[in-house]
Amino acid sequence: RDLHSFPTRRSSDLGVLVAGERLAADDVIRASSAPEGWVVAGGQGITVALDVRLDEDLIREGRANDLVRAVNTARKAQGLEITDRITLTLPAADADLEPYLSMIAKETLAVDVAFAGDDFRLARVTSRRG
Image 1 (cartoon, one colour):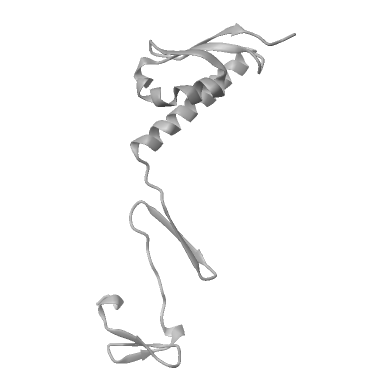
Image 2 (cartoon, helix red, strand yellow):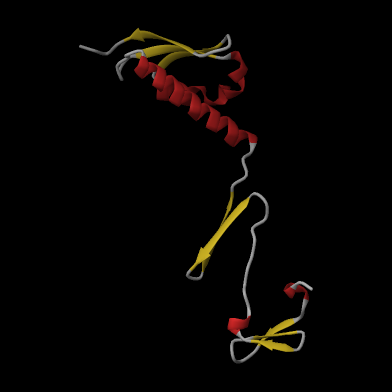
């Protein structure tokens, strides 16, 4: 039977009585497992549990961050300066990222963002070079 199914009570020698049997602290191995989607770590009297499940909003946010990285990599590959402003066309399939457009525009220095086609495209519109 599972240890948790037995009635237990603490004894005075820091052991435990389980089903009438006295177990000392070094007779017991304490193990636990986290529920699916959770990560649990502990030590020095502290236990922390994190819900690591991804919901649709977190997945979309991750895709938006990946898109920003890809656009900024393309900016660098095209030789754009950090001050150059761009227009940005995102794939129509990414229209569900619309709630993140202001973040995408800010992080990529896009003055205009639209959805069309199958791939992202960017074009330099201004430069702040002197």
